[in-house]
Image (cartoon, rainbow, N blue to C red; front, side):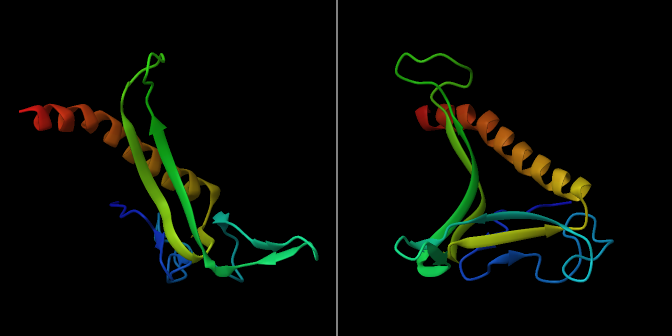
Amino acid sequence: MSLSLPVVEGKRTHWPEKAVCPMCAEKKVFEPHSFAVLSAGALLMDRKSDSGGMSDDLDGFLNLLWHGAHDGGQGGDREICCVVDIMRDVVGGQGEAYFCSIQCLRAFLNKCVDELENKVRKEPEQDENKAR
């Protein structure tokens, strides 16, 4: 299965659009069905009333990032910084991704981690090509 990231972006606040699991495409999601949710968000708070909500002043995000060691630090894949956006610039500050099961949620997260790993692996190749 090919995965196009980010899955939630701009004014689209949830994924998938249709009530079918985006990973297995076999079971339904959304009410009244059982489903797992990956949720990201922020609330624009009114501290005086201790209440908050979505706001067009917020852009939400959810990403995975690799930050390689630098400036004398220690660790693998040094000097590499890579990001995989899962949700990007979500108007209102909140986004959700729905899956029919925890297994499909895990498969999705594994694909996102695989994408980050692939970017880290490719980064040294990109640096070598720049030097040529």
